[in-house]
Image (cartoon, rainbow, N blue to C red):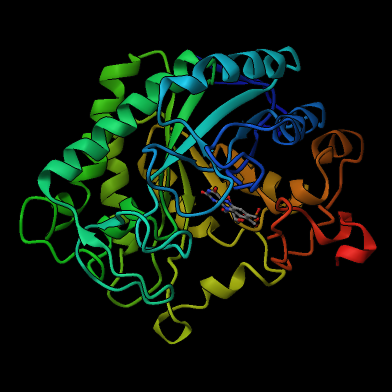
Length: 366
Ligand SMILES: Cc1cc2nc3c(=O)[nH]c(=O)nc-3n(C[C@H](O)[C@H](O)[C@H](O)COP(=O)(O)O)c2cc1C
């Protein structure tokens, strides 16, 4: 019988348990995207806490574009040597670390007006009010190359793999979404066209990093808006990604949209107590694939995750906010079998001083 604490292998990566720390922007890098001691210590502490695989917060792949302050960067070779020192230390703690790479687009309020912001089409962001410049084919080519170069740097830095961020309304998620993608060329229209930039990115990344380096993707099971990326389309894209050689798919959901645009209540589920809220979607996708599916969103209790592991083809569980509250959550779970994370899913983790759990901040900061 499968257990959450199984040793498994994903591509050439060995995992000591089935838990991932899902990508979590920590707001702790310096203004150029280099890791600070605070950020390195946070990851080392997570590694000491027992999680098998850490996915970093999203790292920007071109120097002039980041959707949020104090993100990690990986846009030039200056990151390689310092990151290698860090990943070596982390590996001594028997933990994997995967770099999530991203390009933001119009879902931002950071330095707007001071930089070029690209999008699939010039459609105003429904929450941020930012209207991007429509990416030319040259821009698309450059973007794909930036992801490929960033992935090679990640490999040279000792990361165990990369994860392409194609979820949550950032640019790749916007390409998938017909509300934001109005293009009439081969990057717009039917789902094969809207996903083309992602397929070409995967191929370009693979070309650079070779076969023995895991490439993961985080994607929405649905945008949950009427004119968004649908579940049926997601299943199609996942199957194509498998054919093209992706190593694992993390299933998330929802794009930034005005509340009245949101078709289902999933957006609000992030803030409610409901657990593992994308599990039905992820289970159906896993059923159709032969590569591992990672479930993210509201994973809080060993009981439910064990049940999902036993009764579906979902292989891995990814958690974000619970690790902000309890970096040593997995060690605690190893000792206490029937256990629930202390995270209350309040969503108040954002903090200019570095994202953190309100319960762990000094009283005066709350
Ligand atoms: C502070 C914070 C930062 C986040 N940053 C990222 C990120 O960089 N990339 C990403 O894909 N998701 C990011 N997320 C989303 C999480 O990875 C995760 O999908 C979401 O929080 C649901 O999981 P949870 O219920 O375990 O928190 C972030 C979430 C939080 C709370």
